[in-house]
Image 1: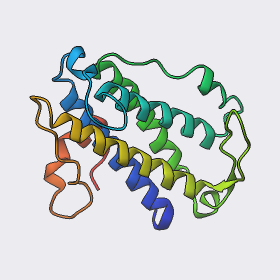
Image 2: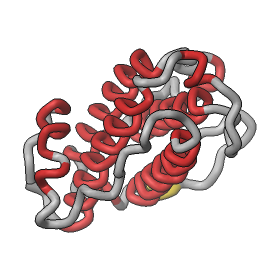
Image 3: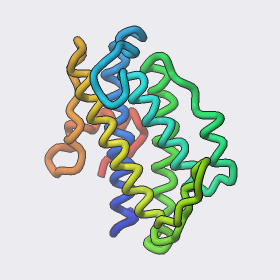
Image 4: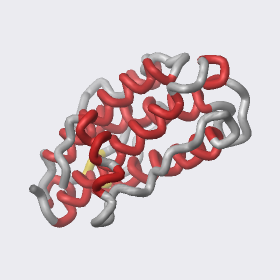
Amino acid sequence: MATGLAGHFVAMARNNAWANHRLLTACTALTPQEFAAPRQSFFPSLRATLNHILWVDVYYIDALERDPAVLRRYDDPPPDFADAVSLHDAQRASDRRLLAFCERQTEATLGEGLVLPRPNRTPPPSSVASILEHLFQHQIHHRGQAHAMLSGTHVKPPQLDEFFLAGEEHLRRDELRVLGLPET
């Protein structure tokens, strides 16, 4: 198992997969109409918020994997999933890609510079570690918004902060098995 900063990013990717699984599993209890219903937040619905998370994940993972066609994501984004079940499947695939990327990192590769291309500008390079930090923060930020929106439905929002502490393994064990992730 990786240690240091590389190990930290593997743990964050595992947490990300688990939290997305928990949140999207809860959202599968909503009808497509409830999923798309207008709600108060940065994005106007759970559907828009959770599709945004996936779009940004795919773009950043493509960039981190140095896909030369990464800018095509602006013209050819992932589909806009109308229901949580189909979105959950796509998010799970994205989460696996991110975890696999993090598992390949070393302290040296995390320090490498990488340009995140934009359609209208070329920003200066950021370290791979900084890009991963930003990506995980982005996911946490918008999952929090989705969590709050879910509280306005008949579905109880799931607990999303039971991942890292010793003694709470039993709170995530079954979901980690569903995700194919070994317990730590």
